[in-house]
Image (tube, rainbow, N blue to C red; front, side):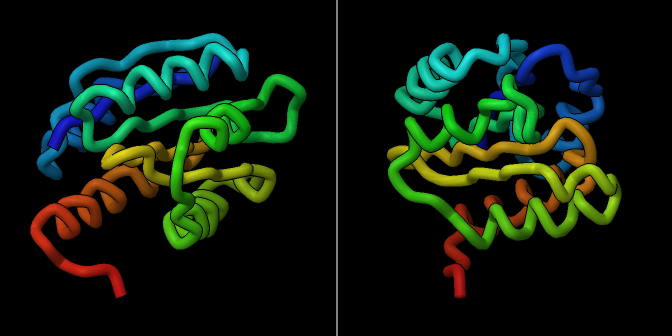
Length: 145
C-alpha cells in the first residue's frame, strides 16, 4: 500500500514517527507535504493526489472550528463516498486523548479507489496505525460488516 500525508497549516507533526508507524503496518508513505489552510488549495491538491495511484491520502490538522479550519470542506469537495464508520472511529478515539478533539470535524471517504482521511492536529497518533491495519484487512479481502 502507498500513501501520502498533507499537513494542514503550521501544525507541529512528527512525520518521522508517522512514517515509521506506517511502515510497520505495511503502508509506504511516499512523501509528507505541508499546505496552507486555504480550502481551494487543499481541494485541488487532494484531487491531484487522488488521480494518482495512492491507496490513501491523510490530512492532518485543519479540522477544528476556527475560520481557517477548512480541511473537511475541501475533502467533501473531492470525495465520492463518505465512510461514516471511519469518521466516528477517528472522532471517538481522538477525543479520548485530547479533550479538544470533541470540536474536530472529521471527514473520511473515497475518491475512485483512494481513501481521503482527515485527522485532527492533536490525537491523530492514537488512530493512525489502527486505520492502516484496517485498510490492510480490506486489501486482503476481509469484507466490512
